[in-house]
Each structure stands twice: as structure tokens, then as C-alpha cells.
Image 1 (spheres, rainbow, N blue to C red):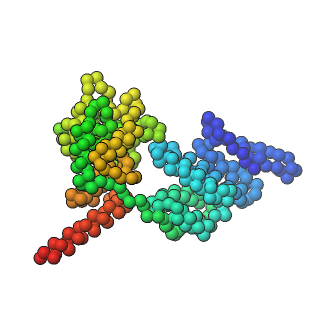
Image 2 (cartoon, rainbow, N blue to C red):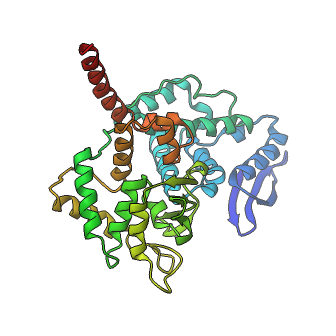
Length: 359
């Protein structure tokens, strides 16, 4: 039997066994980087006695999943992504409880995916399955199990919520109003304008430095992001999110209102904190209400959707839009904005038919 303890130097494991005379003997080792490594070592010690890996396989799937996520996922992700992984840990624990990893079958796992598909959108089901599949591959490699119970499973899920965005007329109305209302004493308006003109994420906007604003080239450089959960600066969401976004000088000139002598190097951060995060979100609702735009479910990130809708409406190709958003693949843009693209396609088809009628 093995027991585990986390020390400052790493994980410690103690294996307790009785010899042929019934005398209890213990063997310990410490300094393991993860609990999974400690378990692997303990299993080898136990296998020396039993000649089998049974003890190694007798671990609850939920416990293995938790240990694997903590060792191989959480150390390298941003706080927002980490919260998703922690959510998965809770979900797996709630579903599988103390079921041993060696007892999970494809049928059992498929039943779980089917239940997820009834409650969640396809994208979340795909994310959960992709994480579990990687975890299972690690378990096979480490000899916890011999077969992949995620092989050839079928993924279902609810259709994603419709992307909320403003019409061209609404966008013009809001942009004019926010531009006129913007004042350095209320920097939230400037964050709204950046989102409208660039499609940047709120975290990317809050992390902007003055050195990122290139007025000569008419470009905003995206190099980092502000993480609201941890309230700290960090890398962008993905490596491809580091990008240069061409934009209008109307915006860049307007941002100069925020520049004051002796100001810090950031547009919005003060002492490392983004105090305007929630005020900007509330301000957006206020500004929309002031110009008579009422949309339930519209939030700050919807400005990113609106930016995409406007570009597609103006005929900008999907590849250019994808690069502007910082997506690694065009397929990601298509997946996220599938409903919007389908809607614009329907309008284009109607225009095509009308054009053909005029021949």
C-alpha cells in the first residue's frame, strides 16, 4: 500500500508491504515533480512483489484525471483557461466518482458524452473530450490502462448561441455617440472605441502600452493581455494572438486624449491594475441605452463579434478577418462565427438571385 505527501521539495511516497513472515516493511522516496510520477514509482515497487501492475491500475479515473491536469495542463495556461480545466475536474469527479480508471469502457464514456451533449454546446463537449483523450493517452503510456476508451466516440451537443452583434446602422449610431461622449476622465469610452475599430479582446485592450500605438504606420501592436481573474499581465490568449492590427487614424488620434505628461506607460493600467474593467462593461450598456439600442445578452465581447460582422458585411475575406482576430486557423473563425457567416451568405445568395433576374 502506498501513501503520498506533498513537500516543498516535491511529492513523497511511502510504500508499505508485509514480507512472508508478516513483518511490515516500508520504502520511501521523495522529490517527485508530480503525484503521477510518485504513483508510477510506487507501482514498480509493488509490482516487484506481486509480479503484476494491478495496484497501479487501481486508481479512480477522477483522481488520475485531476492529478494529470494539475501536472500537465495547469502550470502552462492563463487563469481563464485554468478555470475551464478546474471545471472539467469537478465534472469528471461528479460523474465518475470512485470508478477505477481500469473499469471505464467505451460504452460508459460514450454514455457520459451523450449526457453532456444534452446539456452543453458542441464546442464545450469537444473541449472536454479532447482533454480526456489526452489524459487517457498518458494513462496508456504510463501503463495505467491498456486500451483507449475515447477511441472513435461520437460527439454531440447543443447548437452554439447565436452571435450577438449590431447592425451597420446601430454600429454607426453607437460609434458616433461614444466618440462624442469620450472624455479622459472616463477612459471606458476609449476602450469601447478600440473594441469597435479593432475587434480586440478586452484583456488585450487593457494591456496596451503607448509604445503599442504606432500612429505613423496606423497600427496597434497586440503583445500581451490583462487577466481579470488573476488581475495581472500575461501573454496573449494564444501565440497567434500576438499581432499587428491596422486601424483608422480617427481612432489613434482620439486615443491621444488619454495621453498626459508624466503618465504611466500604459493607456489603462494604473499601478498594475485595470480599474476600468467593470466600469467599461457597464458604460457600454449605458451608451447603448442612450442611443436607443436594447439587446439582451449583448456584452463587451459582443463588440468583437460586431467588428467581424461589419468586416464580413463589407466584403472582407475570411482569411484576413481571421488574422486580424488572432486566430491560429481560419477554421476557428468559421466555427465561432458559423451562424453569422450563414446569415450573411443567405443575404448574398438573395442578392445573387436578384442580379441574375436582372440579366
